[in-house]
Image (cartoon, rainbow, N blue to C red; front, side, top):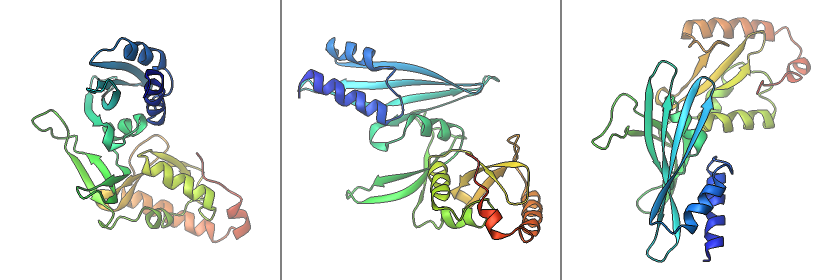
Length: 242
């Protein structure tokens, strides 16, 4: 592999991992400098929070550079910080790292020691750290019993009869996003996030306040009562808010 091909491979890897092309020139510069290893830094503002990335690269004995993963540190205006190192073989993207550091779970395709593929939800235990300063990663295996699509479809959401809208919502939730939706019969907007640990969905109001089960039940009952009065064709004309 030529240096040019190596650089292109690494740039493609960064783009695929959600870091875009911002670091391309510095990456090329560092590879051509032929250092044994180097780190590239990137900072993103997400709302009022700051996310700092440190991307790690190392040169092999054959002279080829490899992307080994990145450190991520999330800072809030109140001065609270959470950090974690994510390795290349975990396949965690820049946005997924943010969601994990926010406490949400992501859905990944992984390999066991025998090389067999399996799916699992991953979530950081932000309340503890190991001897290396890493938060333990909890896995909820595909056989754990959390069925995202079934759980979502129990909620009276607008336009869940549309395969495209449902697929978009499920994809977003698997990335660990907090996704905005409408509930049939309600003018308010709600936010959903997956909670595989308890095999349910977390629901928030439009201001980001976690709703109690009793509050959600009331909204559902009111929504269902209204939905019964709305013709099916009219219900299908309303969509999920993205």
